[in-house]
Length: 270
Image 1: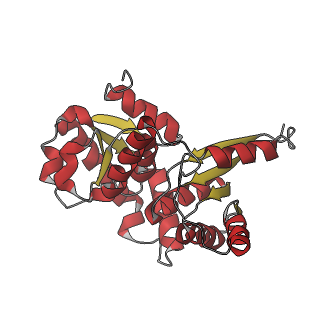
Image 2: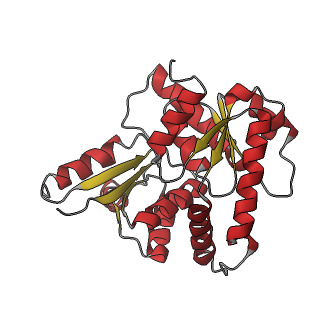
């Protein structure tokens, strides 16, 4: 039996359009299994980098519908640099329509979707989450429904965005070796914080790949296995001292991790 191949679907809205189109195409390949992973509300460069790093680890095909031309070009260029196969479903059509209609597209994600209260709630959650990514605006951590803490490359950003798409306002804060965590983080209600752990070997691979992609040597402390083990031990101690929920993200899909976060923070009942 042929092993299933992964297809990553990127959208700056819900992702329903790109998933429907790929599903329609896959109906012609019923003998070849494929796993679709949808990433919705992709609105920042950091999100694109994080998702494509995940795609690289499984050599996924990347298909995207990004109406923002800058992000679409970034996704295309990054896939090319990483040696990933990709397909832009939207940009060629937008260009043809612009030529035919005589003016440029609005580049506003989600215009196809109806406007309702639930939709606006999710948009508000996504906007909050993007503004509070990677330790930004720590003074507003108390406004978050969920706060994620973890070392660099522990999937904080993609997990945050996935949860935001489900309507939760999420902030994430990096824990850096040798630097005290922000006081605002330590003062939060422990029941709203989840600490992310990851297998040291997996973390080393992710960091080394990131350094190579940036044109830097992977032989640095950032990707050194012994240093990484020390980092993981230190954050584990911090998580226990602060009585935060501990989530192991190693080898888990973002959907599975998100469900675990909601369950451990007792938010899956709402």
